[in-house]
Structures are given as structure tokens and as C-alpha cells.
Length: 190
Ligand code: AMP
Image 1: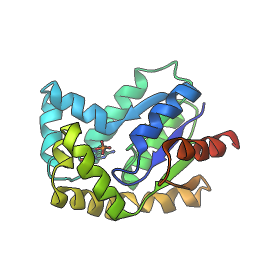
Image 2: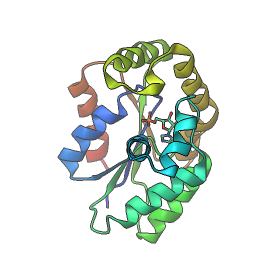
Image 3: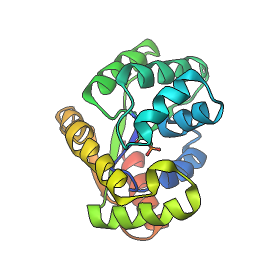
Image 4: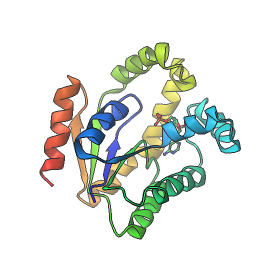
């Protein structure tokens, strides 16, 4: 199985690049942000609980997200591999993911980190907010809070995967297709 983590701060282009990677490598896409927004749209208790965190730019508690990913993976027993987009976001999530993949007799193949500086990200997110309707893309203070969460809780994962020699940083500014090429080069060299 080919299991990729697409890593990076909010607005780095994880969703855009995931779409291209899924169709090229026939992977099963798991975006915890998308799953949480679908729960909220369906008005489930999980979705309502998660929305309190999402609207403030805070991370949703680990146990909620881990349970959701577990259910999703179990529902895809025939997957040729997974692309994790926006998950894991904490060390606890990464450790839980290792256990879940172990149950599939597999592991993470590579962690691709899209690297983009913060001011560019704020610009992109505010622009996206004009059309996405996302509650957390609307004002700069919520966006800055998401970066704080990223710095404190998610960025340490780069070190976690670096220790396992799985982390590869890729320049996330430039043409979408050029960034995609860089990602493919890394995957094809596995
Ligand atoms: P995203 O669409 O990945 O930018 O996620 C939007 C929001 O959903 C985040 O700011 C968090 O509030 C929540 N979220 C998504 N994925 C996770 C995760 N793996 N852990 C905790 N919260 C998450």
C-alpha cells in the first residue's frame, strides 16, 4: 500500500494537491476537515460538537478525530492506499494512526510537507473565504489562531516523521502543476 500524509499549514494547498494525487495514484482520500464539515452539515452531535472548535480556529479533540478516521478506514477494506489530508495534526493522532495502519499490516510511506510562509497563507485563506463560505476562513484573528494551533501542536510532527526519515519538505509556492510535479518526483522515488 502507498500511504501518504500531505502535511502543511492551513492554506498550503493540501486539498488542491490531494485531488491531483488521488487521481494519479488511485488512493483513497481522507480529509478530516471535510469529514467534520460533512458531520456539521448533517447536523450530527459530533458535527455540532466539532463546530465549536472549528469556528474558533482550534483543533477538535483527538479522540473525536481519531474515532472518525478509524471508522472511515474500516469502511474501505479494499483501498490501495490512503492519502491523509489534514490528519494527523498532533503527536497523539500520529501515534494512533501508526496503530490503525498496523491493523492493515501497513505503515506510512512518506510525509510530504508543503512549505509556505505565513503572510502568503493569510492572503490565500482570506481570498478562499470569499467563496468557500467556511466559517474559519473569514477573519484574520481566527486564521491567526489556526496558525498558532499549527505551530504549537502540528509542526512538531515534522520532527516526529523526520526521525523516521519519512518527512520531505516541498516548496508550496508557485504553479500548482509545478508543485504537483515535485510531489510526484518524491513519490516515484520511493
Ligand atoms: P481543514 O479543512 O483541514 O483546514 O480543517 C478545518 C478545521 O477542522 C481545523 O481548523 C480544525 O478545527 C478541524 N480539524 C480538521 N482536521 C483536524 C484534526 N486532524 N485534528 C483536529 N482538528 C481538526
